[in-house]
Structures are given as structure tokens and as C-alpha cells.
Image 1: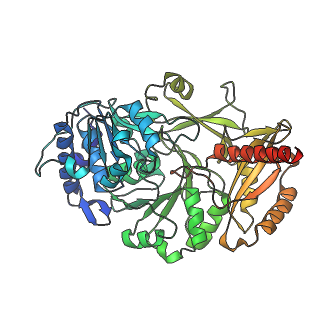
Image 2: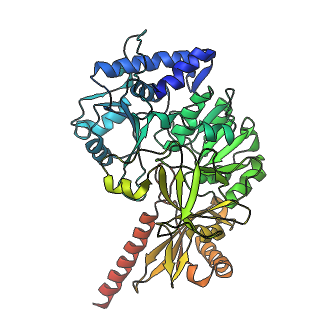
Image 3: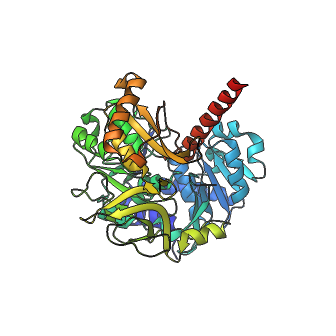
Length: 510
């Protein structure tokens, strides 16, 4: 009977990898044998708190040994690991706790102190990792749960609504080898570093599960990496594979990180959002490295579409990963014609079993073995898949569809623009119009001049119906902790400003 924790650790030790480094943290390396011993101590500690099959175990921990051991310890005994966003406010955690009803919450002492007893009320056991782990020498065999038993609940980021728990089975956690081997060629001598945190499925799959499955080394950092600290992390851990998100890559370029910092890296990967072609080109020019753009989801953990090394093309996502099937459907669920846009549906071995307690949402997003991404794509004449954005982000002006990523790409070609976000929002007439928000580069200079230059560029390169009604320069764009743009907040900002202006005019007329 399959137990994912046994596959990832026990089998590695039996194969002779016990002395190899499984984890690399700021305090040193942890071998596969030592990690297995710590995982068994965590597993016994959970059992001592009455945790059994199907019970939820919340993880509110920074990335590191404690995170990995608690996660794998829960999976080992047949419980359900529940990774939690460490930057989620208390109110958000309260709703997740009410939804999942964890039996145990293992948290960083400082985070638990900040939350207080009110947030964690109703959870039988709330404790630190040091308090959780049992005596040395604990021996806990993997619970023979089977491939379809629940192992992990991963909460969605909530960018399109209330966070939902995607339920993943044991077999899902060890299904990423198609991508790891075929696309990035993950080997036992690789060291993997992600700038995203492990509570994010992208990092969990690529920076912990796949490295352990390949008997490689996962580099885990407790601190959230920034563009300014990345160079230090790269020199300290010497990763061979780097996983990040488009916004982070753009900020690294703006921060002036030098090429020598990337000396150990043989491949860079991007996901989470569409990778702008301008970022791809600038990265390749400075570092001599392709960024392999891909797409996965909380509901799939691993990538389902990806560019290939040596064959990547700016502005595209390559094609389906070996082992996955993809199709594009129209609003009526019919396959679209060649070259036409459609909504992405994917069939992949790691797809979730559905959403916990959300039968209607499950029916909308899952159809047998197929999962509906909600992202819009088309396949170009050369067979490359081109991401047009999420279906919810597209909007119509004068009866024609506006694709935000196309307008954003024009703005990003201006040397003074670091980030760009286009949304459709109501103007005074009640009609939907495009509004563009941009984050300037430090050297961009005067904001008025930047907006004027952007206006001229957009007038030349963007069709009239898609041309922004207004360009606003802002200090930052609202993003989730996983790096995704929160367009609903930009739309709300337009609405608030419009109402304030209207109220001001009304007050002036009285």
C-alpha cells in the first residue's frame, strides 16, 4: 500500500541515499537518514496528541526542517497535512480553521503569539515544533493508507473568490516526475531553491516533493527571499535549479543582481502568472539563462504546460508536459478551432480529488479526470501555447475582447516601467473601460512625463477599444503572497476614486 512519505524517505534510505543531503538550510545540511529520524519523531508526537487517519494537521511554520518534518510526519501516519500561509491575517486563518477543523496546529512560537488564543480557539492542540517532536529514536512505520487516501489539503490563494481546500491524495504527491525529469532533468546531484514558500503548491511540488523523489537536495530558507537578498542566497546554497515567479524575476533585474550570482544555476523556471516576454529577454541577456515558463495550479501541484530548454520562446508556455493532456474549450464546452482562444482543461496524474465541502465548485472545475484551469490560451502556428490571461480578467469594450496581457506587454516595453496591470472598470457613464496601473523603475524620473510617454506609445501600438482610459503610476501593485496580481483590488480602487470625485463635484455644486 502506498504512503507518499515512505516513498520519499524510507525508500531513499533503503536505496542507499541515507548519507546524501536531503535538505540544506541556514544551519547546515540534513541527510536523508537524519530527516527520516526527525519525521518519525514528529509522527510519534502527532500520534501522542490523538491524531489518526484523516485528521487535519495545520502547519504555520517558516520553510525549513520543522516544516518538512511536520508535513511528512502527518502524511506518514495517514493524517492530512494542511499548509498555511504565514502572512495570512488572523481573520483569514479563523475562516480556514472553521472550514478544516484541524486537530493539531503546529506553529512558529512568534506567529502563534501574534495570533492569540481567540484565533486558535477550538483547535485541541496548538504547539511549537519543539514541543511536538517526541523522544529521539522514535520508530513509526508509514501507515499503509493506499494511493487514494487523502494526504494534503492545499488552500487556493483566493484571487478568484473564497479560498478552497484542494484535496490531494498520496499518489498525487509522487506524480511530479514527468515534469521534473522530462522538462528540467532533475538529478540526485541537483540543489533546488524556490523564492516562493512551501505553503504555495508551486514551491511544495518543485522545491520539496520532486527533489526528495529524485534524491536531490531541497534548499529551504526561513526568511522570505527578496530581490536584494537573492544574490546572497544563491552564493550560500549554490542551487542548480531556481524556481520563482514573474514579478520576482523582474525585481531581480531591477535590483541589479550581477551575472556571477547565477554561476551555479543551470535552469530557471517561472510560474504563477504569465511571464512577460520582456522579462524573458532581459534575463537571458544578463544571465545567459532561459526562463522556462510553465503553468500549474493548487489543484495540480505540478506543472501541466511548460517550455522546454533550448526550445523556449518569449511570451509562450511551450506545451503539455509528458504525462498530461490539455485541451482548449469554448463557453459551450466544445473544442476551439486551430489558432482560436479557449479555456484550458487538463488531465494530469496529480489532479486533486475536488474541493473540501464545496460540491458546486467541484462540479464546475472538475469533470472526471479533467480540471478546468480558467486560463485562456491559444496555440500558435508553430505549436507553442500562448497564455492570454485568466478568463475572469478578460473584458469587453465596444463589443470586443480586451486581453490585459497584450496591453501590459506594450507598457512593459517602456524602459521606465517595472510592472503593469490593466483592468476593466466602470467609468462615469457606467460603461466598462480599460485602466492601466504601472510601477515605475527607480530611474524612470517624473511620473507625469512617464504617463505622457506611455500615452503616446499606447496610442501607437494598442487598438482604440483597448487603449487605457487612464494611466496611473503607483508605488506597487496589489499581489497575493504567491505573487499573483489582485486585479479586483485595482478595479475597486478605480471605483473608489470615481465615487470620491463625484462626491467632490456634488459638494462643490451645493
